[in-house]
Image (tube, rainbow, N blue to C red; front, side):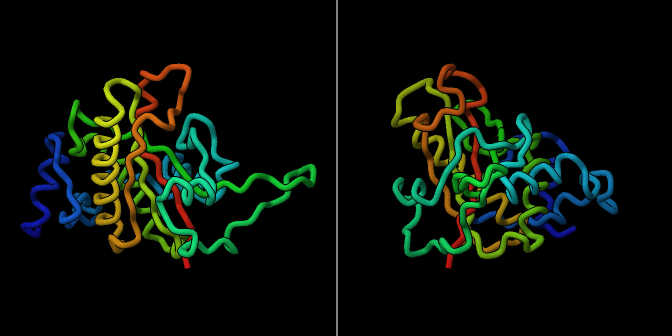
Length: 222
């Protein structure tokens, strides 16, 4: 076992909270014990296919899985200031007619990840690693080449707007660093942003747990 892998593996085995930063070097091999068959979902399993399905076709994403509670369009990510319009390849995202022949709204590929963190912490807990490894496996297969990965951190409405904005940014950054490293993707392909409680998943229940999430949005770039 490579020395650099030992820490990540010990964290995964002992269920300790492990700090993850943009400098961490993590690969999927770090979580491969033995032949890895017992640690990774089987090909075509519900969880793995659910992530891929939701990213490939947001309208087909099933409720209660990884379906994004807040949809984002190209205009949304540009207006928020996440990305410049000049970077976006709008020719790759077009409205497809629905069953009635009307143009369906253009929605960027997106999933919600319910990544749990300890209070006031941006370190990824070891019990949250499996779903992030599943996501990394989906992203590294090449189907999403040419997309920029936008990791958006969200919080509930407890506490000040300023505090939640910063905490959500740091948590999104931790998830982005882990996933891109595990998927062996260039860090330049990922961007993290904190939105605090400005885009609640459940506006009627602003303190609900499902408001605390990290959302991944894929934006086609030139």
